[in-house]
Length: 313
Image 1 (cartoon, rainbow, N blue to C red):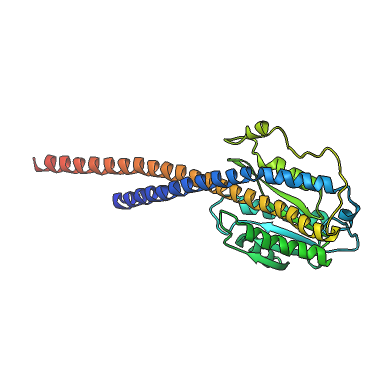
Image 2 (image 1 turned 180 degrees about the vertical axis):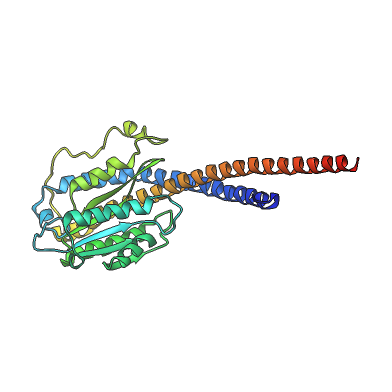
């Protein structure tokens, strides 16, 4: 049996670990609420973008644009994989990576027809480990995802589509459903479709939690998709669409990053809470063991003293 000193050191170690994990839990909770609130504040912009795409859908020029047009001759698929840079977030990263692997098997994609853009260290490691071609990777994306960062990512994605190097562009990330539930999903970003923005907007409001009742107050999706409208584009359709359509794709990428950040902090908060509870449990078990060992030592010493007194009589 371990000595009293070793048990006491273990108890102290578990208590210190619990203090650290509890602090990390509190930090992650604050970051999660900020990320979720930010996604909700930009909901109005996303809904307006959906209305724009809905109205432009009736234009023949839109259907001919490379960001919207489907070209069956293209056989390259690009996956934008969004993961975290750090661990200690439960199965967050492994779940989205498994989703990508399932998608690759279902679509029967090979290394020759598959390319990756990796946002996050864990996803980049996965792509390199499996020998996939990585066009671009980015790490240390700040919690407050900035517009220049998103625009830089979107420019790379749209450049692939316009140049004809990619047939379809998918985004793999973790969708925030509630504090204790995050769902890994694959969503097609390009060619740009109305239902893509529609799904993103509907997924912004979580099913449960502080912001769950906001959907009712918003009055539905607010897409305003009552039908297509014909527009006269000036100076010409090419210039207008070159400005508008990349910005609509930017909305999809932006919200995917926000959802991923909220999911990351939520998963880390839950993982750290579990670690804190486990540390308390282990410290409690060791405390009981410490008391038993100390009591046994006291009993043994008393017995030895009593035996010595009896022997001296």
